[in-house]
Image (cartoon, rainbow over all chains, first blue to last red; front, top):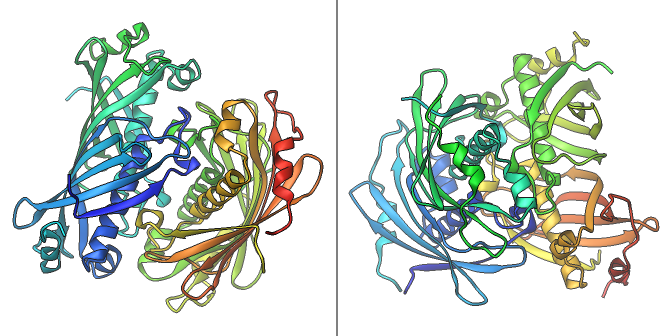
Length: 134
Length: 134
Length: 134
Length: 134
């Protein structure tokens, strides 16, 4: 499968919980960081938008946990994005363990952009996300 | 709606991100803590099981984000559980803001228990979860 | 010892790391939450100040780790504050395990308030912190 | 100044709090990850030791916060270690912002190794940490 964007990570020990594996919630951190780096590469700066009162927010997340990551594991996150409506977009994000490309997690994260009054708003800057896979 | 278990929380400032609202991943922390407290009330100790190499793990999470929580907000998490197969159970978890009972998040978190070899296993202790709402 | 403010907590499982004990960094979360609740009780709202571009920041933290907290532990944080200069204040914060009042952590956290240009500034609102132990 | 070990990082947006800067507690995450990668390079695996009931623990941390990191910042952590007693060692860790090498944080983190009974114990494996700067 081809991805519009790929980011490499390594598990940090503090991300593991008392089961000795990466805690469930931490995968959302990984996914968010991969999305924001992807956005940045396309010229969309999440933090700068927030300072301008434009908030990119998640409205739904579906996560399938397939394999656990543990201390020392390297992994990568692949990201694709699709427009699902004028104001809604869906990130398809897959995590794989690097040493054997074993699937770790599959996620669909749907988001929208909110203007200063908290209303969904179409953001021109986001149109550059939907270029075909390079 | 009736819940088998309810737990009260208050947002802590470090849980808010640069948008000034609780970060997406943190809701999974809230949901996990509510589940573990519910389990404990029913006699199932997540941490003790982990020490005995029985791991309760999440296999799928679906989260609908409805309203953002922010600094100072008090909220509560309602939990119901249903058995979806011999080895799989689904937690239905809803978060509400306390001051107005506004819905904040709706989640379905599916889990299973893994034995020492990582195989899904039926855990007698979990049968006490499926009592009717008290 | 008497404290100006005391806050009760319970360890949440996601706060424990692969050693099965609360991760070192998490104690700073506990300390921060206790400080902010103390400030709030005295009429100082950290988040509201941040929105007004007044940032209360930590300039130094000294933490002595005495006993580890683990899954299920209840504990409390005692807080005292002293003014160390016109623009600097020091929080003395002690954590104790509730079931036996065993000392868990001793910390001195020094902070200041920065104005919009990032300069240390004297904040009238903070004077109410330095009332004697009630 | 020379360091025995250096590790590069980039701030992730979820590490920033409602002030828009990296939260105080997160620097301890950075420091821990840099220490564990340093240990690993010298053949000491924190997670493997934990599985063998040898726990490397922090007994004291002193952190001076000099400059705040914010969204998008790249930075590096320099690590030196010194033996302070038969069973105690001190990590001197300095964080610098990459684009201008501005000092961000200076820390001394003192630790020891505990055996299965929780007693400080001399660990031969740690002797390799104290080689001179390479």
